[in-house]
Length: 359
Image 1 (tube, helix red, strand yellow):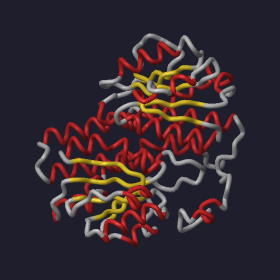
Image 2: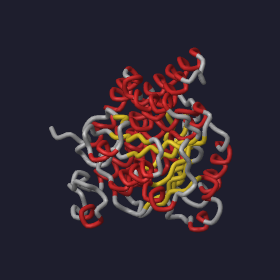
Image 3: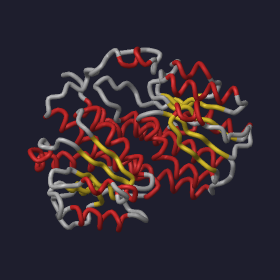
Image 4: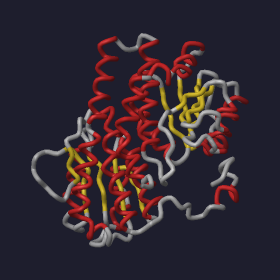
Protein backbone atom coordinates (compact mmCIF):
# COMPACT_ATOMS: atom_id res chain seq x y z
CA UNK A 1 0.00 0.00 0.00
CA UNK A 2 1.31 3.45 -0.93
CA UNK A 3 2.34 5.76 1.88
CA UNK A 4 0.01 8.71 2.43
CA UNK A 5 0.52 12.01 4.21
CA UNK A 6 -1.73 10.66 6.97
CA UNK A 7 0.85 7.97 7.73
CA UNK A 8 3.39 10.67 8.57
CA UNK A 9 0.88 12.40 10.84
CA UNK A 10 0.43 9.15 12.77
CA UNK A 11 4.20 8.63 12.91
CA UNK A 12 4.84 11.90 14.76
CA UNK A 13 4.83 10.54 18.35
CA UNK A 14 7.51 7.99 17.39
CA UNK A 15 9.70 10.60 15.70
CA UNK A 16 9.35 13.15 18.51
CA UNK A 17 9.93 10.62 21.30
CA UNK A 18 13.09 9.44 19.57
CA UNK A 19 14.26 13.04 19.43
CA UNK A 20 13.73 13.45 23.18
CA UNK A 21 15.87 10.37 23.74
CA UNK A 22 18.71 11.83 21.64
CA UNK A 23 18.38 15.46 22.65
CA UNK A 24 22.01 16.09 23.58
CA UNK A 25 23.30 14.58 20.36
CA UNK A 26 20.87 16.58 18.19
CA UNK A 27 21.64 19.91 19.87
CA UNK A 28 25.40 19.46 20.34
CA UNK A 29 26.45 22.11 17.81
CA UNK A 30 23.87 24.60 19.05
CA UNK A 31 25.18 24.30 22.61
CA UNK A 32 28.76 24.51 21.35
CA UNK A 33 28.13 27.90 19.77
CA UNK A 34 27.00 29.30 23.11
CA UNK A 35 30.02 27.74 24.80
CA UNK A 36 32.41 29.49 22.43
CA UNK A 37 30.62 32.82 21.87
CA UNK A 38 28.82 35.52 23.80
CA UNK A 39 25.33 35.49 22.28
CA UNK A 40 22.83 38.22 23.12
CA UNK A 41 20.44 37.79 20.19
CA UNK A 42 19.24 34.99 17.90
CA UNK A 43 17.80 35.51 14.44
CA UNK A 44 15.85 32.53 13.09
CA UNK A 45 15.71 32.83 9.29
CA UNK A 46 13.59 30.54 7.14
CA UNK A 47 10.71 30.29 4.71
CA UNK A 48 7.38 28.47 4.69
CA UNK A 49 7.13 25.72 7.31
CA UNK A 50 10.64 26.51 8.53
CA UNK A 51 9.57 30.08 9.31
CA UNK A 52 6.37 28.85 10.96
CA UNK A 53 8.24 26.36 13.16
CA UNK A 54 10.64 29.08 14.24
CA UNK A 55 7.75 31.35 15.19
CA UNK A 56 6.12 28.58 17.22
CA UNK A 57 9.35 28.05 19.17
CA UNK A 58 10.38 31.71 19.51
CA UNK A 59 8.76 32.60 22.82
CA UNK A 60 9.95 29.49 24.63
CA UNK A 61 13.53 30.03 23.41
CA UNK A 62 13.39 33.65 24.52
CA UNK A 63 12.03 32.70 27.94
CA UNK A 64 14.55 29.92 28.62
CA UNK A 65 17.67 31.54 27.15
CA UNK A 66 16.77 35.04 28.42
CA UNK A 67 17.83 36.76 25.20
CA UNK A 68 16.06 38.36 22.26
CA UNK A 69 14.89 35.88 19.60
CA UNK A 70 13.68 37.29 16.28
CA UNK A 71 12.04 35.37 13.44
CA UNK A 72 12.55 36.70 9.93
CA UNK A 73 11.94 35.38 6.45
CA UNK A 74 15.31 34.36 5.06
CA UNK A 75 14.97 36.66 2.06
CA UNK A 76 14.16 39.68 4.25
CA UNK A 77 17.11 39.02 6.53
CA UNK A 78 19.52 38.71 3.61
CA UNK A 79 18.36 41.82 1.80
CA UNK A 80 17.06 44.20 4.46
CA UNK A 81 18.35 43.44 7.98
CA UNK A 82 21.00 45.91 9.10
CA UNK A 83 20.78 46.00 12.91
CA UNK A 84 23.14 43.16 13.75
CA UNK A 85 26.32 42.79 15.79
CA UNK A 86 28.85 40.07 16.50
CA UNK A 87 26.81 38.77 19.46
CA UNK A 88 24.01 37.76 17.08
CA UNK A 89 23.59 34.09 16.20
CA UNK A 90 21.98 33.55 12.80
CA UNK A 91 20.10 30.29 12.34
CA UNK A 92 19.36 29.37 8.73
CA UNK A 93 16.46 26.90 8.53
CA UNK A 94 15.58 24.70 5.57
CA UNK A 95 13.91 21.33 6.08
CA UNK A 96 15.03 20.15 2.65
CA UNK A 97 18.39 21.86 3.00
CA UNK A 98 18.03 23.16 -0.56
CA UNK A 99 16.48 26.61 0.00
CA UNK A 100 18.64 29.27 -1.64
CA UNK A 101 17.08 31.93 0.60
CA UNK A 102 18.18 30.11 3.78
CA UNK A 103 21.66 29.54 2.35
CA UNK A 104 21.94 33.22 1.43
CA UNK A 105 21.00 34.22 4.98
CA UNK A 106 23.89 32.16 6.34
CA UNK A 107 26.29 33.54 3.74
CA UNK A 108 25.34 37.10 4.68
CA UNK A 109 25.83 36.36 8.38
CA UNK A 110 29.28 34.88 7.76
CA UNK A 111 30.25 37.95 5.71
CA UNK A 112 29.24 40.06 8.72
CA UNK A 113 31.43 37.95 11.03
CA UNK A 114 28.51 36.36 12.89
CA UNK A 115 28.24 32.81 14.26
CA UNK A 116 25.84 30.65 12.24
CA UNK A 117 24.13 27.28 12.36
CA UNK A 118 22.09 25.44 9.75
CA UNK A 119 18.95 23.59 10.82
CA UNK A 120 17.79 20.94 8.37
CA UNK A 121 16.48 17.40 8.17
CA UNK A 122 18.89 16.46 5.38
CA UNK A 123 22.50 15.60 6.19
CA UNK A 124 24.89 16.65 3.44
CA UNK A 125 22.35 19.01 1.87
CA UNK A 126 23.18 22.35 0.23
CA UNK A 127 22.78 24.41 3.41
CA UNK A 128 25.18 22.21 5.41
CA UNK A 129 27.97 23.12 2.99
CA UNK A 130 27.90 26.74 4.15
CA UNK A 131 28.47 26.56 7.90
CA UNK A 132 30.52 24.50 10.33
CA UNK A 133 27.63 24.16 12.76
CA UNK A 134 24.61 22.04 11.87
CA UNK A 135 21.55 20.82 13.78
CA UNK A 136 20.03 17.83 12.00
CA UNK A 137 16.32 17.34 12.66
CA UNK A 138 15.87 13.55 12.34
CA UNK A 139 12.31 13.52 11.02
CA UNK A 140 12.90 11.12 8.13
CA UNK A 141 11.63 11.27 4.57
CA UNK A 142 8.27 12.75 3.60
CA UNK A 143 7.41 11.69 0.07
CA UNK A 144 3.63 12.02 0.21
CA UNK A 145 3.23 15.76 -0.19
CA UNK A 146 3.14 18.59 2.35
CA UNK A 147 5.38 18.43 5.42
CA UNK A 148 3.83 17.24 8.70
CA UNK A 149 6.26 15.38 10.95
CA UNK A 150 9.09 17.57 9.66
CA UNK A 151 7.28 20.61 10.99
CA UNK A 152 6.64 19.31 14.52
CA UNK A 153 10.15 17.85 14.64
CA UNK A 154 11.64 21.26 13.79
CA UNK A 155 9.59 22.95 16.53
CA UNK A 156 10.76 20.31 19.00
CA UNK A 157 14.38 20.68 17.88
CA UNK A 158 14.29 24.35 18.82
CA UNK A 159 12.72 23.55 22.20
CA UNK A 160 15.49 21.02 22.86
CA UNK A 161 18.21 23.40 21.68
CA UNK A 162 16.98 26.02 24.14
CA UNK A 163 16.69 23.52 27.00
CA UNK A 164 20.10 21.94 26.51
CA UNK A 165 21.80 25.32 26.10
CA UNK A 166 20.09 26.80 29.14
CA UNK A 167 21.07 23.78 31.21
CA UNK A 168 24.66 24.02 29.99
CA UNK A 169 24.80 27.73 30.90
CA UNK A 170 23.21 27.06 34.32
CA UNK A 171 20.16 29.13 33.43
CA UNK A 172 17.93 26.22 34.44
CA UNK A 173 17.96 24.16 37.59
CA UNK A 174 17.95 20.40 37.18
CA UNK A 175 14.37 20.10 38.44
CA UNK A 176 13.18 22.77 35.96
CA UNK A 177 15.00 21.02 33.13
CA UNK A 178 13.44 17.66 34.05
CA UNK A 179 10.00 19.23 34.41
CA UNK A 180 10.18 20.58 30.85
CA UNK A 181 11.19 17.19 29.49
CA UNK A 182 8.39 15.46 31.36
CA UNK A 183 5.90 18.00 30.01
CA UNK A 184 7.17 17.50 26.46
CA UNK A 185 6.76 13.76 26.88
CA UNK A 186 3.15 14.18 28.02
CA UNK A 187 2.48 16.65 25.20
CA UNK A 188 3.69 14.13 22.63
CA UNK A 189 1.53 11.44 24.23
CA UNK A 190 -1.56 13.56 23.48
CA UNK A 191 -1.02 13.36 19.71
CA UNK A 192 -2.91 10.06 19.11
CA UNK A 193 -5.92 11.50 20.97
CA UNK A 194 -5.81 14.58 18.77
CA UNK A 195 -5.70 12.46 15.60
CA UNK A 196 -8.64 10.32 16.72
CA UNK A 197 -10.76 13.31 17.70
CA UNK A 198 -10.02 15.17 14.47
CA UNK A 199 -10.96 12.12 12.40
CA UNK A 200 -14.27 11.83 14.25
CA UNK A 201 -14.98 15.56 13.90
CA UNK A 202 -14.20 15.54 10.20
CA UNK A 203 -16.60 12.67 9.53
CA UNK A 204 -19.40 14.63 11.22
CA UNK A 205 -18.62 17.83 9.34
CA UNK A 206 -17.30 16.46 6.06
CA UNK A 207 -20.10 17.61 3.75
CA UNK A 208 -20.07 21.08 5.26
CA UNK A 209 -16.30 21.50 4.87
CA UNK A 210 -16.37 20.31 1.29
CA UNK A 211 -18.52 23.35 0.46
CA UNK A 212 -15.84 25.80 1.60
CA UNK A 213 -14.50 28.06 -1.14
CA UNK A 214 -12.14 29.99 1.12
CA UNK A 215 -10.85 29.58 4.67
CA UNK A 216 -9.56 31.78 7.49
CA UNK A 217 -7.26 30.52 10.27
CA UNK A 218 -6.47 32.60 13.35
CA UNK A 219 -4.22 32.05 16.36
CA UNK A 220 -2.32 33.95 19.03
CA UNK A 221 0.97 33.87 20.93
CA UNK A 222 3.15 30.93 19.94
CA UNK A 223 0.13 29.42 18.18
CA UNK A 224 0.12 32.18 15.61
CA UNK A 225 2.89 29.99 14.20
CA UNK A 226 0.42 27.09 14.28
CA UNK A 227 -2.12 29.18 12.37
CA UNK A 228 0.50 30.11 9.78
CA UNK A 229 1.42 26.46 9.32
CA UNK A 230 -2.19 25.27 9.11
CA UNK A 231 -3.04 27.97 6.59
CA UNK A 232 -0.02 27.12 4.46
CA UNK A 233 -0.90 23.42 4.43
CA UNK A 234 -4.56 23.96 3.55
CA UNK A 235 -3.24 26.03 0.63
CA UNK A 236 -0.72 23.38 -0.41
CA UNK A 237 -3.12 20.45 -0.18
CA UNK A 238 -6.66 21.64 -0.95
CA UNK A 239 -5.28 24.44 -3.13
CA UNK A 240 -7.91 27.05 -2.47
CA UNK A 241 -7.60 30.58 -0.97
CA UNK A 242 -6.69 30.69 2.73
CA UNK A 243 -6.04 33.76 4.90
CA UNK A 244 -4.19 33.69 8.22
CA UNK A 245 -4.46 36.35 10.93
CA UNK A 246 -3.08 36.86 14.38
CA UNK A 247 -6.13 37.04 16.64
CA UNK A 248 -5.98 40.72 17.55
CA UNK A 249 -5.05 41.76 14.01
CA UNK A 250 -8.14 39.94 12.76
CA UNK A 251 -10.20 42.51 14.67
CA UNK A 252 -8.55 45.43 12.90
CA UNK A 253 -10.13 45.31 9.47
CA UNK A 254 -10.32 41.69 8.22
CA UNK A 255 -13.48 40.96 10.25
CA UNK A 256 -15.40 43.20 7.85
CA UNK A 257 -15.17 40.55 5.15
CA UNK A 258 -17.00 37.88 7.18
CA UNK A 259 -20.41 36.77 5.94
CA UNK A 260 -22.56 33.62 5.99
CA UNK A 261 -20.26 31.90 3.48
CA UNK A 262 -17.12 32.37 5.62
CA UNK A 263 -15.28 29.39 7.11
CA UNK A 264 -13.08 30.19 10.14
CA UNK A 265 -10.87 28.08 12.39
CA UNK A 266 -9.83 29.74 15.67
CA UNK A 267 -6.92 28.03 17.45
CA UNK A 268 -7.73 28.49 21.13
CA UNK A 269 -5.25 27.06 23.66
CA UNK A 270 -4.78 28.15 27.26
CA UNK A 271 -3.21 31.58 27.48
CA UNK A 272 -3.67 35.30 27.92
CA UNK A 273 -5.82 35.66 24.79
CA UNK A 274 -8.13 32.67 25.29
CA UNK A 275 -11.12 34.60 26.66
CA UNK A 276 -10.83 37.07 23.80
CA UNK A 277 -10.77 34.23 21.27
CA UNK A 278 -13.81 32.59 22.84
CA UNK A 279 -15.71 35.87 22.63
CA UNK A 280 -14.66 36.38 19.01
CA UNK A 281 -15.87 32.91 18.06
CA UNK A 282 -19.13 33.55 19.91
CA UNK A 283 -19.67 36.73 17.92
CA UNK A 284 -18.96 35.22 14.51
CA UNK A 285 -21.05 32.16 15.26
CA UNK A 286 -24.00 34.55 14.82
CA UNK A 287 -22.70 35.66 11.41
CA UNK A 288 -21.76 32.30 9.89
CA UNK A 289 -22.51 28.66 10.66
CA UNK A 290 -18.91 27.80 9.90
CA UNK A 291 -16.98 29.32 12.82
CA UNK A 292 -15.03 26.55 14.57
CA UNK A 293 -12.50 26.30 17.38
CA UNK A 294 -9.62 23.89 17.94
CA UNK A 295 -9.47 23.87 21.72
CA UNK A 296 -9.25 21.91 24.96
CA UNK A 297 -12.10 19.50 25.61
CA UNK A 298 -14.10 21.09 28.43
CA UNK A 299 -16.70 18.34 28.57
CA UNK A 300 -19.44 20.55 27.13
CA UNK A 301 -19.98 18.28 24.17
CA UNK A 302 -20.13 21.21 21.73
CA UNK A 303 -19.85 19.43 18.37
CA UNK A 304 -19.04 22.65 16.52
CA UNK A 305 -15.52 22.54 17.93
CA UNK A 306 -12.57 20.20 17.50
CA UNK A 307 -12.21 19.56 21.24
CA UNK A 308 -9.28 17.41 22.36
CA UNK A 309 -7.93 16.34 25.75
CA UNK A 310 -4.63 18.11 25.17
CA UNK A 311 -1.87 18.17 27.79
CA UNK A 312 -1.83 21.94 27.24
CA UNK A 313 1.42 23.18 28.68
CA UNK A 314 1.34 26.74 27.31
CA UNK A 315 4.98 26.58 26.22
CA UNK A 316 4.50 23.45 24.14
CA UNK A 317 0.95 23.71 22.75
CA UNK A 318 2.17 24.27 19.15
CA UNK A 319 3.26 20.62 18.97
CA UNK A 320 -0.20 19.26 19.83
CA UNK A 321 -2.51 21.95 18.43
CA UNK A 322 -1.26 21.60 14.85
CA UNK A 323 -2.16 17.89 14.79
CA UNK A 324 -5.99 18.14 14.39
CA UNK A 325 -5.45 20.67 11.63
CA UNK A 326 -3.02 18.31 9.89
CA UNK A 327 -5.73 15.65 9.89
CA UNK A 328 -8.29 18.10 8.54
CA UNK A 329 -6.17 19.42 5.68
CA UNK A 330 -5.27 15.87 4.65
CA UNK A 331 -8.83 14.55 4.82
CA UNK A 332 -10.27 17.58 3.02
CA UNK A 333 -7.73 17.43 0.20
CA UNK A 334 -8.21 13.70 -0.23
CA UNK A 335 -11.98 14.09 -0.45
CA UNK A 336 -11.46 16.89 -2.97
CA UNK A 337 -9.44 14.30 -4.92
CA UNK A 338 -6.30 16.42 -4.96
CA UNK A 339 -3.18 14.44 -5.84
CA UNK A 340 -1.04 15.71 -2.96
CA UNK A 341 2.06 13.88 -4.23
CA UNK A 342 2.04 15.78 -7.50
CA UNK A 343 3.71 19.17 -7.56
CA UNK A 344 1.33 21.55 -9.30
CA UNK A 345 4.03 23.59 -11.04
CA UNK A 346 7.15 21.39 -11.31
CA UNK A 347 9.13 24.08 -13.12
CA UNK A 348 8.46 26.77 -10.49
CA UNK A 349 11.61 26.48 -8.31
CA UNK A 350 13.89 26.16 -11.33
CA UNK A 351 12.33 29.25 -12.90
CA UNK A 352 12.66 31.24 -9.66
CA UNK A 353 16.00 29.70 -8.63
CA UNK A 354 14.57 29.25 -5.13
CA UNK A 355 16.00 25.77 -4.55
CA UNK A 356 19.23 24.20 -5.69
CA UNK A 357 17.61 20.90 -6.61
CA UNK A 358 14.23 20.70 -8.21
CA UNK A 359 11.46 18.13 -8.18
